[in-house]
Length: 90
Image 1 (tube, one colour):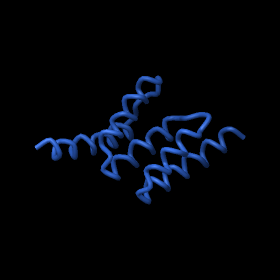
Image 2 (cartoon, one colour):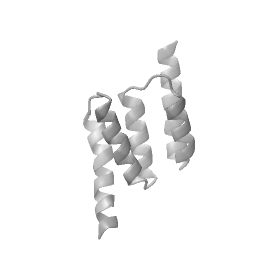
Image 3 (cartoon, helix red, strand yellow):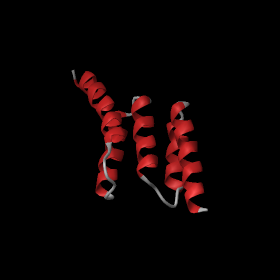
Image 4 (spheres, one colour):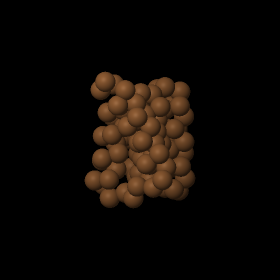
């Protein structure tokens, strides 16, 4: 049952992120009892897509601190934010 709840919650936060509703995605993420690499990646990508690059980096570093493995999807998601952050600094 817990895995099903995790999948549904991750799908919900992914949907909110894709709709540009970062606050709602945050609420779903924070309410989740358990996280996995997919939920962390969904949040990082959602924040990046919504131009919340600093927040995406916070999630990236917190994911790493919590001991989750970084995979190719994580690195691709965060690299999009790196490129955009470079534009902001100029």
